[in-house]
Picture 1 (cartoon, rainbow, N blue to C red):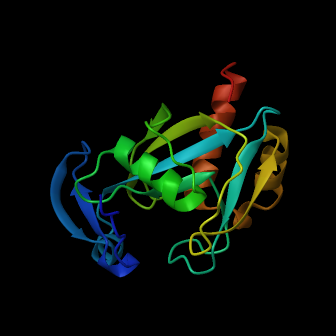
Picture 2: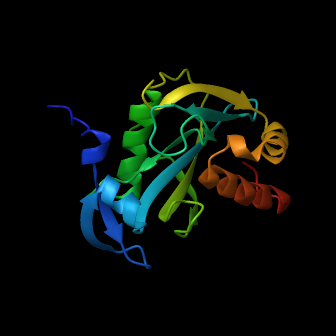
Length: 181
């Protein structure tokens, strides 16, 4: 089997979707972002045996939010993919984590300004690594206790991606309601 070669970022095609997250056409990444068209993304929060969450610091080569802290793994859903296919691909590309099936879907976020007009499925995964970080995607990663993430996001919000801050607020609400990460 010939491996899928990921196109250069500017050449990536995304499914453009309507307000109900139904595909209406395909367009290049740059055009989708420039026009603020609705599209799709996935985020994964990976928790280790100690209950810490792995966060990634995005590479300075990224076109969106370079150098900011983000979910364990995140990425766009490419044209023709569904969310579960995208999360499996992204885990392999970003973290060198090859899984046979998508991890558990946790919650969904409607497209909004904070997500960059992306409908987002957030997934949960338990694992301790080790990970093989893709340097074009990730500068480094860190395991942090949820309470430490709470503190850091509150003290230094400018160091975190807008979508991650929204996701983390929703995670905090779930924790307050008694749901575990």
